[in-house]
Amino acid sequence: MTSKVVHKGGCHCRRVRWEVLAAASVVVWDCNCSDCSMRGNVHFIVPAEDFKLAAASEEWLTTYTFGSHTAKHKFCKVCGITSFYIPRSNPDGVAVTVRCVDPGTIKEVTINKFDGINWEDSYAASNISSMSKVEES
Image 1 (tube, rainbow, N blue to C red):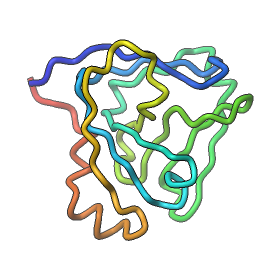
Image 2: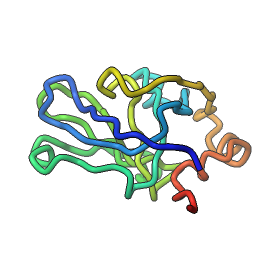
Image 3: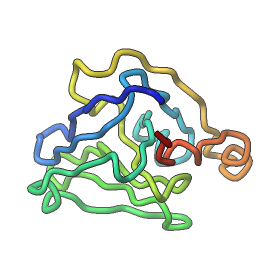
């Protein structure tokens, strides 16, 4: 079992804040779907239970969906930053934008490519759905 640390982060204006429990060395996904490529989003995925949104943050969030409407793109109503979202590939998890993690806790980043343009094929070949599963002790 990989040792986990608490990463803190949020949006640019700091109205949206959260904590996430994840390894210090993270595997991130660089997706070329229409949304991720326009935002330059690179993210790592955790089980939903390992993500905690600060209570005062909820009022500053709004949600955007498109296509299958499975993904829930959460962004700050003030600064517009999507610091996390519920991904289509892992509706039981949370995708955290790696650049929105406060400095100091991420030690290493491994980048995996996800071909969001050919979503179904990439999903089947990537094993991305395993990223939101809770590790057994």
